[in-house]
Length: 158
Length: 93
Image 1 (cartoon, rainbow over the protein chains, first blue to last red):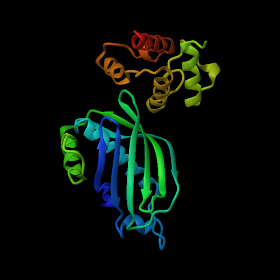
Image 2 (cartoon, chains in turn blue, red; image 1 turned 90 degrees about the horizontal axis):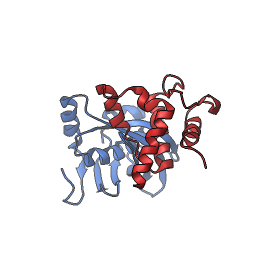
Image 3 (cartoon, rainbow over the protein chains, first blue to last red; image 1 turned 120 degrees about the vertical axis):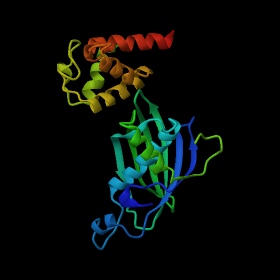
Image 4 (cartoon, rainbow over the protein chains, first blue to last red; image 1 turned 60 degrees about the vertical axis):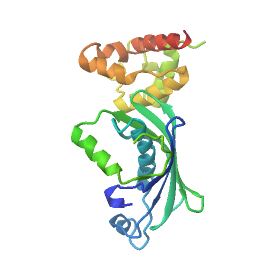
């Protein structure tokens, strides 16, 4: 993970397009400029970054399910709770479930768990799906997400 | 039994900061009620669930952008309710 570059997911462990579920994992770096400021002498993962990790997870599911053809981004947060402080170096498991498929938008329930199994955060989010603003952006996103290791069944399309 | 308009008005009042008494069938969701695109998504989500339909918001937006339909066709509440009734009828058919 490169936190300050918003490269937040390391590995997708399970992904089921039909069920609309995804499970991914990531490990926070020990050091980051984000930790330097949040907070000095007491580094913890900001709540907004926990939200962004959950957003990336559900978003990646949709992005792949839509065959990388559509731009998926956060449109709203219906509910979010940040339940535990997460320290640098922590290993996290992130889950997402699509609970509603609208026209041009999806709603997902997401959660972020620590290695102990305790829930660090959970949120219900709205993801908007649109055409890519340009071919360059579409290609750049495909390149950027290629770094995510996807450990799934071989019948998931590339 | 509540009419489609009653349900739509209730959803709008609950999801947006619009008093129920201001929500009329002739009202334009955006121009009269001040609902923005993200608020409208929340409304569509609630309506999708309430009526068990999938409001084709993307298609409507494209039709308006291409000039094949007017904004009023979908965003004046009495017209929105008529569209919802059509979708519910199609689902039941």
